[in-house]
Length: 142
Image (tube, rainbow, N blue to C red; front, side):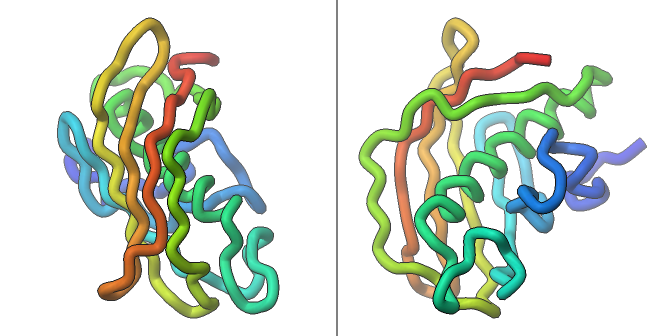
C-alpha cells in the first residue's frame, strides 16, 4: 500500500487527463495542506509567448486541491471524485512564470462545508511569489 503522496502516479489522484494535467507530482499532503510541483514546458497548453498564462496558474492551484482530495480518498479506499471551481476570490498574479521553471503550489483547506471545499492557494518558483487566491471548489461529484 502506498503511504506517501509522491509514491502515486498523479493520474491516480486527479480526474484530469492529457493535455489538461497541470500537476507533475504531489510532494506532500496532510489533513489540511498539500504541496505539488509543475515543470513549465513549452508544450503546455497554457503557455503563450514563453510564459505560463493566468488560466494555467489557476488550474495548477485547482489541480493541487484535486490531488489533495484524491490522495485522501485513495488512502481511505474511496474513489477519486471530480471537483469544479465554483469561485475564485482575491486572485493576485504577480508574474507569469517562464518556460523551464519548476513551480510549487501549496493549498491550505480553510473550510469544508455543504459540498464545497474552501482553500487558500499560493504558487511560487525559487523566491518568487507567482500568485495567490482563495478558491471554492464543489467537491465529491462522480
